[in-house]
Length: 168
Image (cartoon, rainbow, N blue to C red; front, side, top):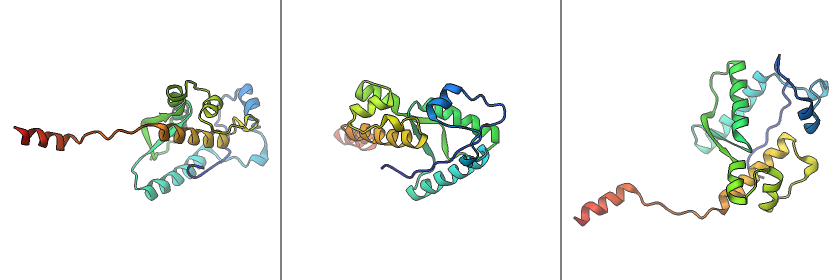
């Protein structure tokens, strides 16, 4: 399974609109006390700490979000950051990788379950729409797409310039 896993239930922010259809699909009951839901501020603090540990471990400066329909997730994250006035996000402010777009180009389909099927990734529809399950399938899909690419080494522009200079 690609990467570390982190899951927390988060309390809805005051004034937030909870779509009944979305709650039905995900099976989330926001009033269930057994969820032990965190505030957005605490959830972001914990998530950012984990991401920062991974960045340090990998020698990176910023994290790039990889998500299925990533524009939605990035907007959701940015709004949560603004609501809690978080000062330092480890995520790049505007760059993300969208596996829906990658799947469209690579497999001809944007729906996660169908893209996974076309990439020979097992997808259990009964587990779909769970944040962790969908994130794990998204990570597998991202790896499948990237590993399917045929990489070409591009010439180094400085060595090319030196070759031209030496030829004259």
